[in-house]
Figure 1: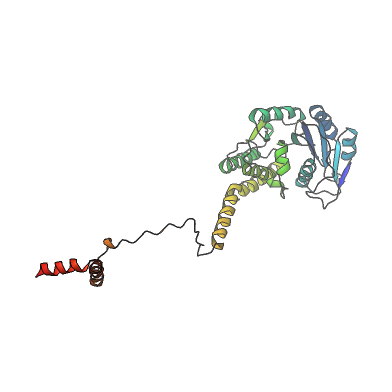
Figure 2: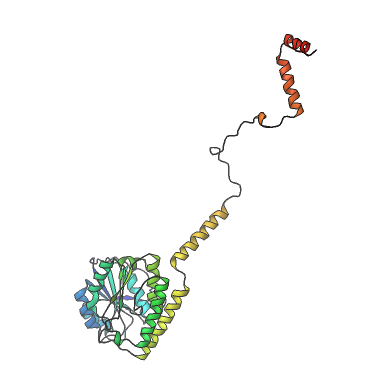
Length: 315
């Protein structure tokens, strides 16, 4: 068992551990002693490695996960789902793998769909595959469906991705995404945080229809929470500038700073200076003094005999 203190956020998790170049299952658990063993056993059959991130459970969740041959990372105290996700991402950043699938230990996500995620990623050449609860759509409350439609429209309008079910936490991320994904700070903005990062890196995102587990409970409180999450996510997506726009603004500001720091008078490069043209006197009007000087030079150049003949010819 690996234990992280409460101050742990996004640091390294020790030395680099060998991991087969395949699929890793990351199970986020909190007081799930009734379902943790079943989820771990099904996940181990489908993947190369199973990691359980326990968020300070007060029951036998950690003990039962260890008995099921899963690696356990536990928090000293309860810190929320987003802290468990950040811990898992920081731990996987030092491992060698190809795909990591995140699912819940409550039993609402079926581990039997893991290989379908990998197959879809290979066919579409995608780095992120999000689950969509389309097979059991009747079990989803109406308020949750409206919330999904609102978040899906905002995501398609801003990023161009189509998910159908943005509120589903059953997703697969590639090694490329895990190695560069910054930590998220809000539970309701996890999906938007991942998609915004993917849009900045120009990654491909897809969705896959998954089966809702038998332990998925449709309570009114869950539907209200989903609608609140959808509202937070939609506002974040609509009013947060895209990463590309931020890069363009930074580039423009850097260019403006470089231009303002340049000197006003540029130094003269002698190699690029054009040679001056020779002045031709025939192209300008001659003054009376110029004409008199020319006549004097002509008179000086003539011999005395020639001058005498010219004078005699005048008279």
